[in-house]
Amino acid sequence: MEDPLCTVKLTLNDLSGAGAGGSSASYWISEAFGNSSTSIKTTVYEQFSQVGGRALVYNYTRDNTQIFVELGASLFIDVNYHMTNSAKKFGLEFINYGEELNNSKVGIWDGNQFVFEQSSSSYWDIPKLIWKYGWAPIKVQRLVSSTISKYLKTYELKEPFKSVDSEAERLHLDLERKFTAQYYFSELKNINQLYLQHLVEPMTRVNYGQNLGEIHAMGAFISLAPTGAKSIKGGNYKLFEKFIENSGATLNLNTKVVKVTKFRTTNGAEESEKYMVQTKNGTTEIFDAIIMAAPIQFSGIEFENIYLEMKNIPYVTLHVTFITGRLNPSYFNCTGVEICPNQILTTNSGKTEFLSLASKVVLENGETLNKIFSHEKMSDEVLDRIFSERSWTFRKVWKSYPRLIPNQTFPPIEPDTNFFYVNSYEPFISVSIFNKI
Image 1 (cartoon, helix red, strand yellow):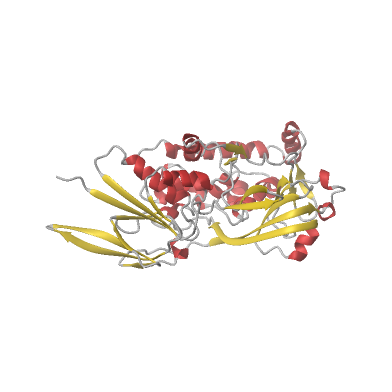
Image 2 (cartoon, helix red, strand yellow):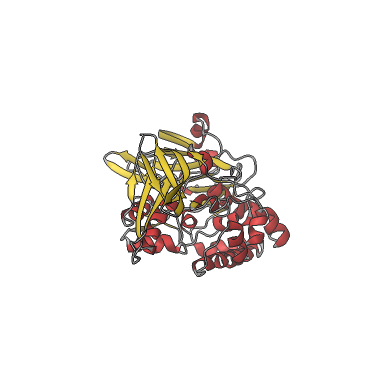
């Protein structure tokens, strides 16, 4: 009997691109069948010209100096084992998140004042927090540690999960996905409300563009988890390139998939289902299985004879703005730019004009390269208030991540036979590493 040929199609379009889910799927498939008698042919379709999905990097060039800044998927943490271990295996170099900027200082801005500023010595931060917020910082940190430990059990479990709901249940994280973070922390865990407003909510705003009354508690825990945050030198997309390079997959860049059709075929007495993939440039290919690693609702793909009964997932519209210039200290009621925080998070006071502002690097002329996240477009008028000088501005708007709504219905992982949907996991936890799980 001849060895069976299993062809696997990875269709990666629009938001995801050849990103975390699709690139890692091609790699893990090759690893799983590496010593098997089963022959695997994997094809990755990407409608854009580069690998990376949401791990987009903008190459800022000035005075013959290149600076790579992440538009999205900017960091991962030590316990993201698939990311860290794979990056080490491929020989990629890490940089600690934020180390490009000397004298980095965090401040929480409420539109009128900084309600919290990081001390010059971290030893003073914890006593200062306890003095102002009681034992809330310690209680929240213990909750974060306990919850993340629960989630990390997923690395130890050998049995695959059939639905996101069942995965949340077996990890004992059902409450964390059923309630808003506001209700979970204030009502179930009795956490100081002022601490939630000043220190917890700014983290959900910068990470997911959502407030505590909107986001489920699991999303808040992921936002609070970045201990040992790091990125890959030159851009996190390099890891996804390595996944595909080492998978042996055929990568089709600049190739838009327009239609996927399921059909039945007969080989003697044996009947099976196949998938035909058609691209915008007119090519057609047949596959045994599909791994869809992009939000179906934004893909623009026509699906024929495929059962895809699922609700659309609401996504956050995020505005990313890069600016080179000099911060205006008077906007932040600072006496000088040198004493003003340069990593600025915001509260949900209704008075702030952005979600976060981070200075990334100091340029040779003394200007800083800054990144702003906001729900609305940052107009020139607003930017001219925030910056005393501005020499360059770049804007991008995109559907960055799902709204992590409590108790929502998750899309099925396998909506049809041998049709697998990576992004079904995103409304539970939307982080690059978890698309790999």
